[in-house]
Structure formats: C-alpha cells, structure tokens
Length: 249
Image (cartoon, rainbow, N blue to C red; front, top):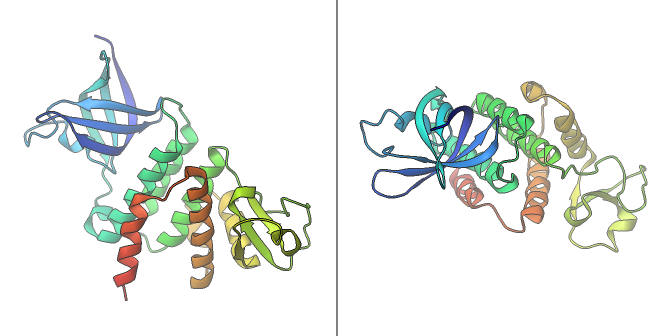
C-alpha cells in the first residue's frame, strides 16, 4: 500500500471506535487533512505521543479507502510549557480552533503552517497578548481576508481624526462615513498602527512591540469581531479564555 510522509501540526483528536482516534492535521505538504490513528488510545501505542493535540510531528501515513491512517509517528516538538497552565491550554486551543475554522481541506499553504509553528514556539515567553493578535492579523491576511487599515474603505480619506473598524466593510472608516454604516468599533490611532505593524513584521519580532493594556483590549476586540464576522459564529475556545480572564487578579 502506498505510504507517504508529512510534517504535521495536530489540531484536534476525536475518539472513534475502541482505541482509535480521528486526527485533524494541518500539514506542510497537503494543508488540512483528517486521518485515522488506529490503537492510539492504548497506553502502549507508539503513535500515542505523536498524535497529541498541540504537537508538531512527522508522520508516515498509509493510503486508505475512506481515511488515510497513521503508520508511524515521531513527535518533533511537543511544547510542554503550554500544557502546564490553563492559560497556555486556552491559547493553544484558540489557535488550533482558528486554523481549523478558517482553512479549507486539502489546500496546502506553507505560510500558514510556518505561522502556526512559529507562534507556538514563542507562546509563553511573556508577551502572549501581542503574539495572539499577531497570529490573528497574519492568518486572516494569508487566507484572503486582509483588512484595509490605511484609509477609509468608503470614501478613501486618509485624514482620520477618529477611526472606526467595520467588520462588514473589511476595514476602517472615518467618522463621517461611520454614521451611515452598521456595527462599528472605535479604535485609537495607536492601536491601529500596532495592528499595521504586526501585519508587516515577522512573528519572531513580535516581542519588540510594546503595547499598553488599553491598546491590547482595543486590538483584541477589533480582531475578535472581524473574525466572528467572517466565521458567522463565535469561537468555542474563547469562552474558556474569557472565563479565565474573569477570575484572574
């Protein structure tokens, strides 16, 4: 039977029959695919570690009638630091849910794969909020939803004393145009410049950008509403993140 190797990020694992699991992968070579990991639930399974969610693994897959299956696997990077706190698990859950929700099946995008891997490598190093915003603005741009942040999307004006973000319009609008549009979120010029910087900068430079708590809240609100508009639903993992934030001092 034909076998092939993939570099894969494990997005999701769902129990199937007995000791088997259906694994959702985002691969460098094939984009998002689903495979069967037979016997992965068994404590003695050699595949077990390589198909854990939030892991970067190298997998040997075997062609199947319905789903291909994992023949062998090696966990390359397991990111243990993210598994040691509820905050880490919440962030990891959100990132993989976002990739799963936004990407089509079997549509390879090496830039998305690199973005996911680079982001997981720097999470937990002390600037997680800006890392999350960087990931959001980059992935939606890579997948064709890049927002217009340089001028009013309605009249084209660049003289903007007050700026509003309108998800349905795909970018910012001026105060004059905002009055004739639907749902809008006001954003400061500083927060807007931060988002534009994150869109341009490589993920590895993210720690160089210093943002105020207020700007962080504005950016988070804008990105959440923009993503939810395109998905036409909320993100399940954000409910967990919001609950954690509520009880943090």
